[in-house]
Image 1: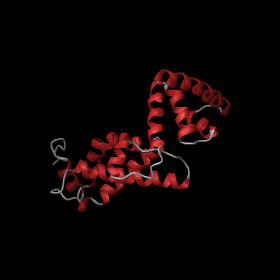
Image 2: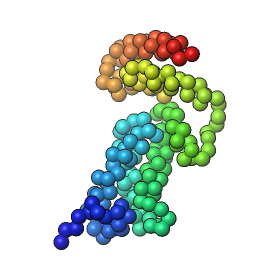
Image 3: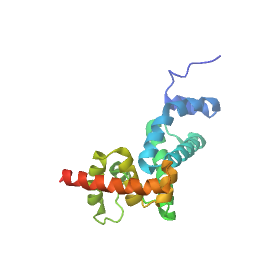
Image 4: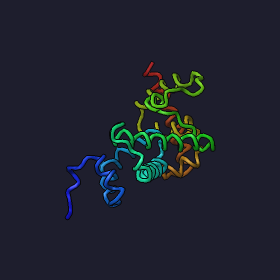
Length: 185
């Protein structure tokens, strides 16, 4: 007999999914979009975020027996696994020099520590404020090229543009940045 799962708590579904694996799809449906948004705020790359979410759900499923209902909610436990998985990917990308990404302040709070503080964080905050005022495409190309240090050919591939178009876009974006930075002061 089929029981409706909409009335079951996340914790109940997780426990039952150990014996009835198809029930895990309910948790996936409930949390996939939110997990993807959270991973995206850490990694700033949709492909990496999708892989991290998939890895996190796999870890959640494989470690379901370790979940302690008395220690907290499923959502807290699941988000902790997700954030740890995303931070592992972030650190791997950073070590490999693929991308230099500055983490969200919320993530620094989660970590409870700060990396080597160089003073760039304050500068970056001002830069981010200016970028927020700019057209999305300009802000995106400047973030990728200057803050994350992507080569223009990689930016072109990511944005679906020719390298020449990206070069022109970077030039126009720099002019826009200067104007917006002047208006910001």
